[in-house]
Structures are given as C-alpha cells and as structure tokens.
Amino acid sequence: MDFHEVTRTEEMEKFRKEVGAWLEHNVPEEMKTPVEEEDRSEERYHFWRQKNKELGAKGWLYPTFPKQYGGGGLSGEHLAVLRDTFEDYRAPYAHRPSYLAGVLLVWGTEEQRQKFLVPLVKGEMVGFIKYTEPHSGSDLSSYESTAVKDGDTWVLNGSNAFPGGHEDETNAVYFGPMLTDKEAPRHRNLGFFIIPYPTPGLTFKRMRLVHGEGQCFIYLGDVRVPADHLVGGDHQGWQVMGTALEQEHGGQGPSFHRDAPIDNILSYMQQHLKERKSPGGDPVLQQIAIEAYIESHVDTLFAMRVRSMYYARMEMQWEGPMGFLYNRMHGIRNVGRIRDVMGMDTLVGPHDPLAPQGGAQDAYQRSSFILQHGAGSLNISKVVLARRIGISRTREQAAPTPATATSFSV
Ligand SMILES: Cc1cc2nc3c(=O)[nH]c(=O)nc-3n(C[C@H](O)[C@H](O)[C@H](O)COP(=O)(O)OP(=O)(O)OC[C@H]3O[C@@H](n4cnc5c(N)ncnc54)[C@H](O)[C@@H]3O)c2cc1C
Image 1 (cartoon, rainbow, N blue to C red):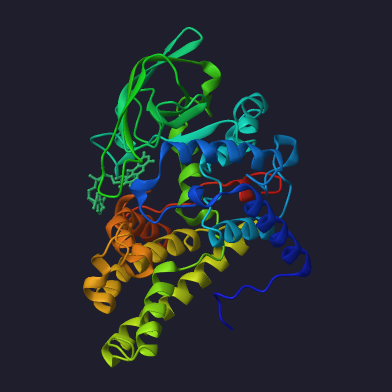
Image 2: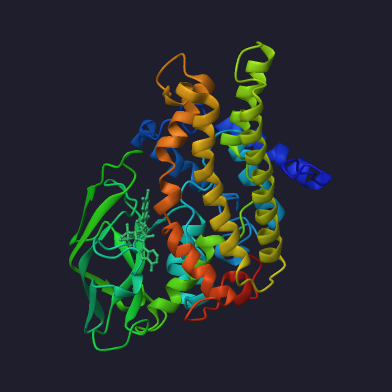
C-alpha cells in the first residue's frame, strides 16, 4: 500500500468533485498560493478573507464543527477532502484557521460562543495567536504583559512579537494569555483574553523576516476589553492556552498531506534520468532520496494515526506531539537532501524563468527555518514529548481538546 495514495468512498469522491468544482468556479489563477512568500499580496489576503465568508456560509470553513455554531456538522473525512483538494488546487484552505474556535468549544460560555465562535466559524471574524513576548517565547509562563480589572472592564498593557495581522482588518481578534496576578504562582497567574482589532490602544508594526512580512509586533497601551473577553477564570489562562497549544501541536490531527519537497526531489531525479543527465541515477543520491522517501511515508502514517485518534475521540498523550515533531524534523532534514540532490539548482528562485520546478525548492529552503521556531521551537517540542513519556523531572498530561472535552462532533 502506498500511504500517499488515499482511497476514498463513493460519497467522499462525490464530495471531492463538488469541492473541485467550487474551486474551479471561484479561484482565479492569480489568487492561488504563490511559490514565493513575498508575493502574498494584501489583495490576495482580502480576496481569501471574502472567500472564507462564502466557505463559512456553506459550512466548509469549520466543516466538523456543530451546526448550531455555524459549522458544517460534517465528518473528519470531509475535512480531509477539503484540505487535500484545496492543496491540490494550490488554494489556501481555511486561510486563517483559528485554534480559538476549539478553545471556545471547550472553555467558552454559551454567550462567548455566540459572540466569538459563530463569527469565526462563519468566516466573518479572524483570529491571530498572541503568545510570544519580546523576552519570552519558549518560556511562555513567564508572561509579563498585564491585565488589571477596573470595574466591569480589563485594562491591558504589554507587547508581543511574531503574531500575524493586517492593518486594515475590520473584524479580527488577538487571543492569548495576560498576567492577572503577579503574586500567584506560575501557571496560576494568567488569564486568557480575546482582544478585538481594531481597538483603541492596540497598534502594530510589521516584522520583516527572511521569508516575508507575515508577522508583526503588537503593542497594547491601556487597551480596555469587557469582562466577557476573558475565557475561563482569571487564574486559568495557562490551562485554557493548553487547549489551543494541544490542537496546534498535533493533538488535532492533520490530513493526509502532500510532501511537495520530496515529490520535487523525485521528479527532478526522474527527469534527469530520462534526459540521461546526472544526478538521475547517481547511486549516492539514490541513497539520500530513498531515505527521504521512506521518512515521508512514516510521516504520513503518524498523521493518519493522530487524525483517526482525534475523530475517534481517543485520549492522546504523546502521539500528537510526536507526529508534529517528526513532521518538522523531516522537513528540516529535507532541506539538506534537496541541496545534496539538486546542487546549485536549489538556489534558483521563483522569479527566475529557468528555475527548476518554478523555484519551489529555493523558496522551501529559505522558509524552512519556520519549522525550527514557528509554533514553538523543536527543542520545546522535545521537552513536551519527554514529559509525556515519563523521562522528565515533571509529568505532563495532554490538555483537553474539543474531541476529548465536548459532546459535539468535531
Ligand atoms: C515564522 C514565525 C511565525 C510565528 N508566529 C507566531 C504567532 O503567530 N504568534 C506567536 O505568539 N508567536 C509566533 N512565533 C514565535 C515562536 O512561537 C517563537 O519564536 C518560539 O516559541 C521560540 O521563542 P523565542 O523566539 O523567544 O526563542 P527562545 O525562547 O528565546 O529560545 C531560543 C532557543 O533556546 C531554545 N530553548 C529555550 N528554552 C529551552 C529549554 N527549556 N530546553 C531546550 N531548549 C530551549 C529554543 O529551542 C531556541 O532554540 C512565530 C515565529 C516564527 C519564526
């Protein structure tokens, strides 16, 4: 069995065709995902913001979420079909999926679900993660940005590095922890807040990173939010954030994703073999390519296991983080392999008409450092895994996710 080949039921095949027809009808070539990160224009962002509202209206944006909150009430299989078909079409599925939606299912009051979850699920609102402070990324619990209660409102002050954002957004929220009690012990001193954007006192500045300008700094200067913008108790922020992190770090289960860098290595070698050029049949490079090929299948197997566990509502401890970590380590190892196999061709960028494979491998190796740091660093993923399998000073349990904590379909 080739684990990259997905066998679908007749019903899912029909659904795949329906999704494909929607994409064909709705997405012009220039709005597809560009190879070069820097070519992601604001126009494209707003195009997809609008399309997400249309997807939301069809229940396709959060397909597995309960219908009562605007979701599709569909199965995990439907979600996998949506993700895969969008990927095949080079369209960004769920342009801004938000882990906040899962947090609200687990921790939100009914009023908070109506206020925040429904617009998120319908694609009217978009959520950005606000965890990293300039001084603390890995050590999230050493949070310094403060939330102080003043009557019926909270007054927020502080700053964050790396969140996403768009200056002309009209209906966005930032979500993450704030220090509510300086005297309380670690992990019991935070609240988890939803902060609307735009709002007075919240400003931001774009960060210019090697792979593009998708991240920014945000500054909170006496930002006021009503009491219902606190999710969970005012000392429960660490626990609430655990639900968001658990989903992001593998606890939700990816679909059967493509492995474009590996596909590109193989097709590069096949092409050279056909043209009787090196490195088509080079025995040393064959060794490298085969290692990558096998690893790619193992990666898919991890993804399949985690996804099936999530939709079967099984308790996961180490399975999610392990799949997440393996996927990123595999991605980083592939950068070296691409350079070994493709040599100087790896350095020809997407804007060069002679670039092999449209410059995809050049763009990949430049953006691959995200795999090292984005969504938390690899070292921290290893720390989490060590705590889950019992080889660390402290033991850690997986935080609840919508699959384990709610009676809704997810
Ligand atoms: C492209 C990109 C997108 C991002 N998007 C977001 C976003 O949307 N929202 C957001 O809030 N943040 C975001 N981040 C920030 C990201 O989560 C942090 O960069 C990451 O958590 C590491 O934090 P740091 O940069 O402060 O590094 P540090 O925490 O200072 O770590 C520096 C190094 O020390 C290592 N280290 C630290 N502590 C330990 C330990 N206990 N054991 C072993 N090694 C350790 C780390 O692994 C790392 O290699 C993004 C980052 C990138 C690069």
